[in-house]
Length: 337
Image 1 (cartoon, rainbow, N blue to C red):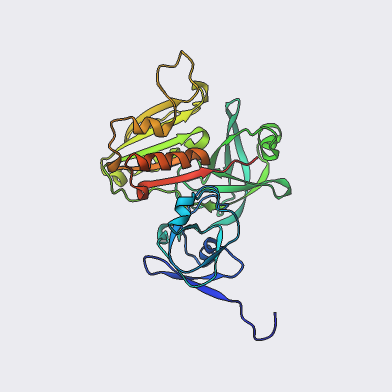
Image 2: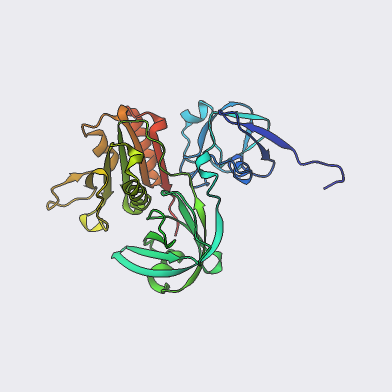
């Protein structure tokens, strides 16, 4: 850099008046996070759409494809903050998530405490951290586990914070995956790993609707389980509201977890997408099950977790059926090995 030269920084203003600088070589999202401003996000790769926001004024430049944005959304002025860098001062129609400011991510050593086979393709891993290095997080968030060779994979935390600091993960087998091969063939109790977290902005918000619906598919039940544990420990958070859990899988053998909550009013509906004649319950997809129920979507807040295709479909279909878009919170699993 030449003496006296300066790195150009543009100002980003949020709808609640907060401001931060956008660095020339960093996305808007990364610039915010570096300055302690937490914007909605999940995958940080342009695929989940969680960080979508509308630009009120200003210009930005694309750094990576905004895969989850439709042509209509782009035409309406929406961008993904994980994909763009500011080219001018920008006003965004979004607010920071102050609740997450007290949970900054960090890298910590951890060891495998237990390995439990749940189904032929799902295992439960419990990690323990050294005393004094436990991870503080909000139920619903995820961590990146870092293995040998720096391989990094994201996994939602499947439990609310515990006094012993242990973290539970539900891990799905991916054929041919390097990390899957480790988890299902080589992993042993006491193996040393590292994790970075907490990450993501999926957490329980102050309820503003009469009912709460939680949608999950496959191992997407992990952060939903953590949220339910949180509410069971502090039922005052939902002030007597009823919670509807709709969990979808391909077959009845894939339901590896069952609920047992005493302090919350929970209605649980399992749904199978590839059911045989022996299945007497609901069939199809979780969002269809909700739409076809007698639950009035205008009075609902939805928390959804699963693979990105489900999240994108559920968000679009539920909005079309009457759900207010701002009442849909999600954590999309982006497929990796």
